[in-house]
Image (cartoon, rainbow, N blue to C red):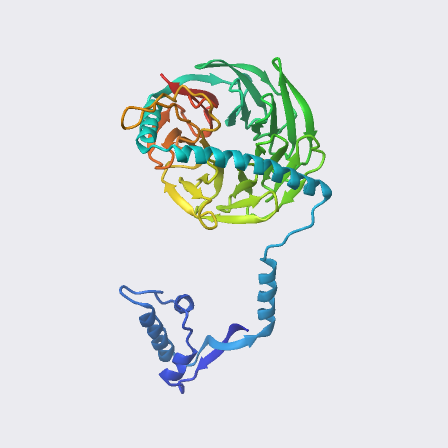
Length: 476
């Protein structure tokens, strides 16, 4: 039964004990009543019991005054609360055959990828040598400390801030999106230089475009914008061809586009409070439209196996969705302001999230419900992007290292060894994975840094920002 308060008149005939029985015991209600009486809600050194006694004394002293303290039953309110509770429960809607087939396909793909990842981790564990790994990490960190600006590049014809930058899977092309709605492709001429190859024509996006490369085809990319349109492009010999355009893909701004590791599916997050899953080969209709956030959905990232999708919203909440079953398997609570970026580590169990609360949080999927593992006080303003170094097969940063006996020399993998973050404080920062120590701050942008990405050989970092420049960073 719900409880409300009916007026009670202190007619002077009630004893202090009778009045005390009518005074609420909840401290928040006591504070509220003191505020109504124009009294301080708390005094120095005053506890909850003393505060309630003060309210009893005040009521006793004020004769012939109405006070709303008596508890009465209100069945109608109780019913409303029960209805409200029912509305807050999780619910699932039936999917069509296309969604069922997609779930089966993702299941088969993710099992194969998980087997490969776990087998690799078992081999590494079987031959694990602490001294060797420590030398490997120290070597990488010492090289990251040598990273400096290698070039600053502007986009011809651009009129607004650059808000997204991504390097393709072959490390040969850089895609950049702008708040003026255009997508620009740069060609990597050398390790230290890029040149503008092609820019999208006007009319595809009104403003605030976003880009993502396909992991399976190095010349395919997706873009979206504030008007809610989704586009798929192909880059061929210096030309940018629009292979598909979907108007009204969302009813609000599309904040992020992200390809599934297989390259067959695409996720979009939106200010319409939903995220959607699309079939890249048949994008006429979304496979899945998913609610779950209380505010705009901004960030998303696919698990390296392809089994899970992490989403983050401006409600400061992250969700982990199992694409094979459609269920949410974890809710990530810890940020106090909106989540703007997320990225999975190649190890498959660490997830990084960047927020407007200036922190980067590391979540561990091996813990119950994806518990927070570590919180990095990373920046002094909004963290706009977080990116792990991914899928490095041969990197200049990897050098042969021996064990403690100066034997068994090996070249270890660089993938997942460091994390890059960008921020509105104008910096890009590099962090050592596992211990999450700060390694290097890359300073050069003259205003907010909107996005950052790491090349597939781990030796090149690219960023863009409010100053309308793209900057390359690397070892000098």
